[in-house]
Length: 289
Image (tube, rainbow, N blue to C red; front, side):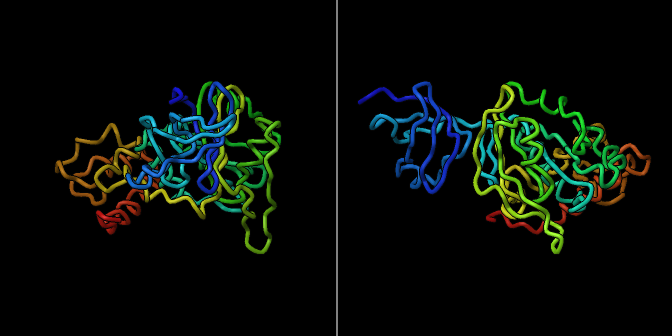
């Protein structure tokens, strides 16, 4: 048997995967054993493949992942750019905080970006997310600091439809020429323009453009549970373990060091409100879900 080649999945549609290896890009199918094991190859996976022709092959093995997202289906990310517009559509901080927590708990560095700052100011939002790399941009903003983060990293862009993910990616790497959509005046949100997940080379790294939030399900992440949730809010870190009760859920006063820090202004109130809402949602989630 020919020696197995190693490569990385750069795109996948309908059970066919484009795998980039030293020998070039091969069109590969996954072996049936993955279905039997309940394993699905993901874009970003490092894999071993068996070549069965010039540019075709079969995926024989998925190498260990350092992280994985359920939706969008991506593996081995270094950072996740989370975009939210200040207007058209208005920011949904609850959803943004959920995605930040999902990234943190998966070992993916979150980068927060507020767009359309020429339509509405972003100062109050930037203050909320000062614990993170946080950017506020408009169409004429300097994006070099964002571009610099691409070097040597595998990144993904996530955000509600219409916040300008593809537009920003085109500014960073014009050669991508990603399709963009217009905002629907009736609905106040954009048309879906990205139909599948694919890795693109950009600025010395790789980036995935992903569909809008209609297919993003952060609560499907196995790492996001009521027991782990507090670790997904990095502002809580200095206060964890300092509550009156060791099993404190940080959702009620009762000597909670986190709530005390919120009242003192050391933790943004909206971040804690998101935590409490998400904690309640996770409490309702069954172990088998």
